[in-house]
Image (cartoon, rainbow, N blue to C red):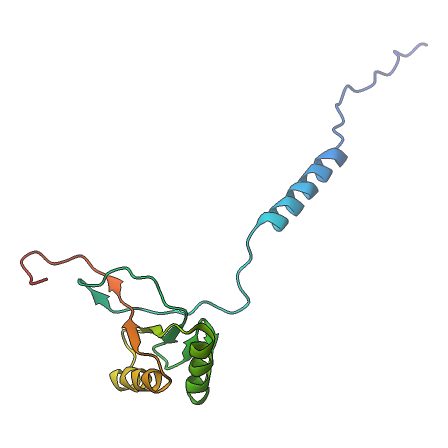
Length: 142
């Protein structure tokens, strides 16, 4: 008795080795070219709105006051006791007497006034307050 010869199955075998290599290279490319978030978290701030606000170039230094009362000098946390000395050093270094104060909408008004006093005491003559631009309401005074 003769049996029919066994037929080989015609299954296609896909070699995924090269696919894995390509995917690995793409992963490396994405990791190398992507931008990474800074180590310190961003400062969450809700600036007060103003219809008369205009864009201005920021001075060499920016002081930020959050709703919780945290102080930052150019995105670096700073204690209030160290603020005057740091501002005097920056003023001596740059010679520019302009500074921007960014205070949260819900920060205490007395704290903002106190910071302005500290800034003036450190030698800065021109203090700008930062606000977000809102659309003017029709019929209101400019």
